[in-house]
Structures are given as structure tokens and as C-alpha cells.
Length: 147
Image (tube, rainbow, N blue to C red; front, side):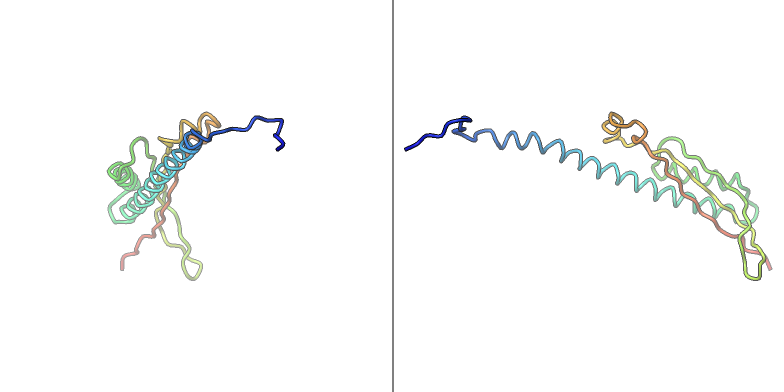
């Protein structure tokens, strides 16, 4: 019977599962924490969208100013669970109407810089500018003209 020569042949595969687990576990954890981070990001985007709508709704009511709309939007965002700085800007706009005329309206834009809490430090090692993202939500509503 001939024997094989060359590379040594491993007699046992003990520990192979441990090596596979060491390789796969960090990738699995990165995927899990990435899903959690994007879930928080989406939740904050939904709150910002609702804050912009709330601010625009207050802005179109009679007797309220753009400052009231901004205050309402930032208050809604902070009570909605967004920590840190939220910027709201309310502007008066003219919206197109039938016959070439325009309707007065209010547009509220809310912005927030979201930093990934779990995968952000890892992303920062690769590219620091990707560790955070600016979320922007805008809502425009027209004023109802009184009769």
C-alpha cells in the first residue's frame, strides 16, 4: 500500500466548531446591532415626520405664529423620545391653487443629527463621516380661508 507524501494529514477535527463560531459570531453581532440601530433611526424619522406635521398644523391655525409652530414641532420631537438637538424652521409659503391663484400656507422643516449608538464607533473606524446621518422631515399645509 502506498503512503501519501507532502502535506501532513490532520488526524482530528477537534475544535473546528469553535473556530467557526469565533469567525461567525462577530459578523452575527454586527448584523444584529445594525438592525437595532436602523430600527432606532426609523423610529426617530417617524417622530420627526409627525413633529413636522404637528408644527404645520399649529402654524395654519388662526392666531398662531411661525414661532408657535417651531415650538410645537420641537416639543413634539423631544417628548417623542428624540434626545439632543432638534431644529425646526417654519416658513410662510404660497401654494398653487386652481385658476393660477395661490393659497397661503405654512411649511415646517425639522432636522436632527442621528448618531448610530451601536455600530457608529465601528463605522467611525472605517469612515468617521458615516457614523451619523442627518434626518430631515418637512410638512406643508395650507391655511383655510375664512368665509
